[in-house]
Image (cartoon, rainbow, N blue to C red; front, side):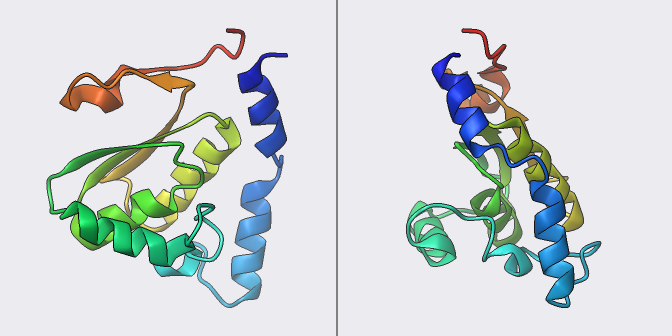
Length: 142
């Protein structure tokens, strides 16, 4: 098993979206019309969680029309925050297919599919502004 397969296997839950949506519904959230703030407790795995994303965004001086690639995007919390708060267009790239599927679903439920999308990939060549379009999907056999 390749390193990529081991990592993806480690992070694959199998019913992650169902678990997230069930918990949100149990907490009174309208799962068909979510806000990014509804997801802040579950979709940011990095140190500092949502507060760190907010601070990081301020340091980036983001604005509408800026295009970002979020490498290792997980469930997409930071990407959705950048789009919602600043109008940025974000392409998230993650190794784990389940994370990509859940991230795209949560993004649709937040009404942000015009600004945010996620793709599964192993590596990215980023020589230009077209970085998001140069992602090489993994065959998981490399």
